[in-house]
Length: 107
Image (tube, rainbow, N blue to C red; front, top):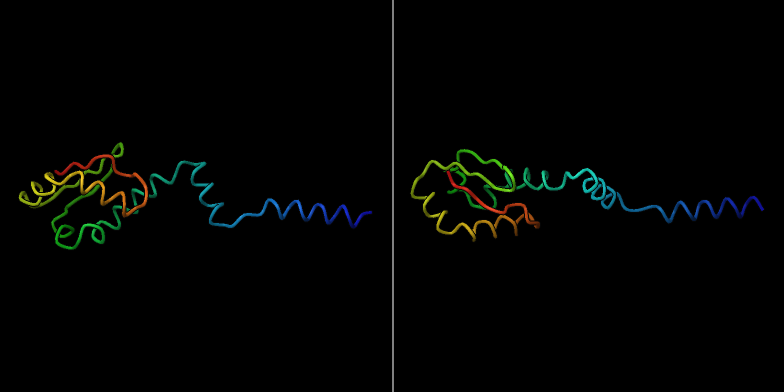
């Protein structure tokens, strides 16, 4: 009789087992860290997403209330990016795979 009970306990524990990736995602969701991680990921991948010419003229990047603030050293580039702001937002969100950026402000 003892053997069957132990086997049932083992089966129950196996039912609770989940892959570590899913566990980490659940943990990040519980502590609301995914959004901040996406923001950091986007800032780190700025050159990869936007290209080297834009990255060279970018002085500073930071987030505040789902807005990405980009300080540029080139006025013509700032004007050009302002004209295609919605395309930039779409490009950034697609690269991250989540709606991280609601608006971009070029300074």
